[in-house]
Length: 134
Image (cartoon, rainbow, N blue to C red):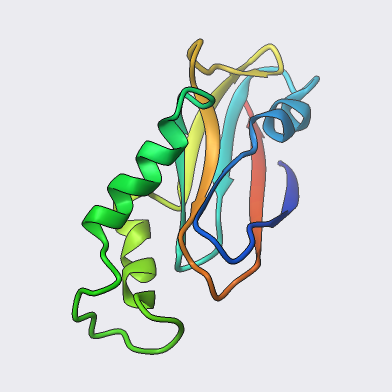
């Protein structure tokens, strides 16, 4: 199994970070198989979305409407609304599995792979890429 960890700086504001280029580079010359993408954090998730058309802002706005900071969250540590950050991975999974064909992720024309991070308390994230050959 081939594996690599990406280091991301997500900052103190909610973020949608495109990692498609890094994923394509990782898959170069791998052949056929399955790619697992995993964010080992309790407050971040992954999504396959179209980017560059405003979808990133729409996604963040939708998540903020669903996961409001003012909700009376039982989870209390961290910045205001941090309880919502811990619910995010139930809506956007921390893992994706993507088929790889001839060393290329088999993504649809408009699909990009993004990390979604609403958490203001953690500035940096890791993403583990793991390729399992067919």
